[in-house]
Length: 351
Image 1 (cartoon, rainbow, N blue to C red):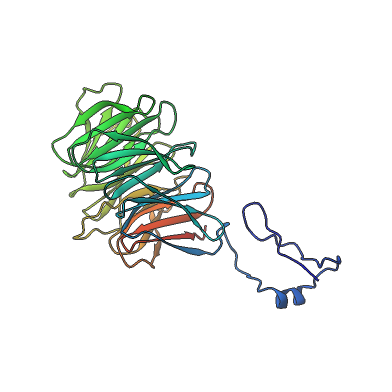
Image 2 (cartoon, rainbow, N blue to C red):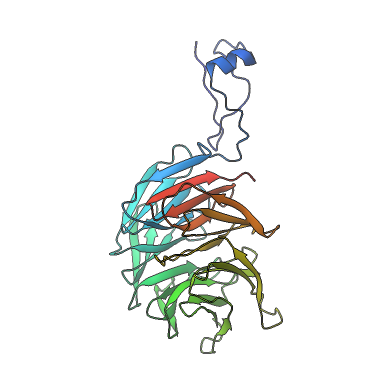
């Protein structure tokens, strides 16, 4: 007598009535005695509602899901990038080494074929996640590289910002820096706008600098409003809004549409995420459809705002150190949080 729970392609149990090999149908009462059936209304294909990923030997600073949603890449003070399977038992199936210091930010190429990282070793690296090999090391910064981001489509550009006060534009086709924007203060966070025509650089001097890639020698537009250093920024998926996380304990939403009128582009100030004496680079991220926004916080909680209601929707405990970054899954209501307690949590949201 043999039977098994059928599995669908995404790893979820198929809840059709189970049958014995002889073809007899299991009555529900007997089935519940044979199998511990969970009557929980699960929202995703995760193995459990919350998964704990342990393996880093230092603070976990950054992470991002692959575009197909099957892999999570995380970077740490231990100088490694760990690759985790999102589904099943979240196996740690790969580790990539090559940086000489802490890894501070990581992003996938839009087609999932490459992974990019920046580090306190003053470099940006390009990786092949299939083989685990480093393809290219981009040297040019003279101090810690705090942040990097890639273009969403079109020309494969990469932007990086560092403690040397520079924002560097790299053309990945020729694998070299094609322009350097200079500032007198450290750059802590960088990103492209949606069509990769402008670069946003968050600085130690409380401002966001907007560089125009078509007129590279023009003075940048400046977004003012924060009263302390900007540690994270992210452009919404529709390209209309910029979110910034700063050491003044606020998250601000800015209208960055090219022809938006008025001098004050700040639309909202969100409170809940905090910074402390550690002065970690706490990031901020939009969800796939811009419905939610997550910000790293020193209070050890995962803070997520509902951007339709403009209110804090989740404050999730569990970590015992600063939550440095939270990222959203591209296809399902799943988040991953990276913390100074060296742990990564992956969990599903209620909606």
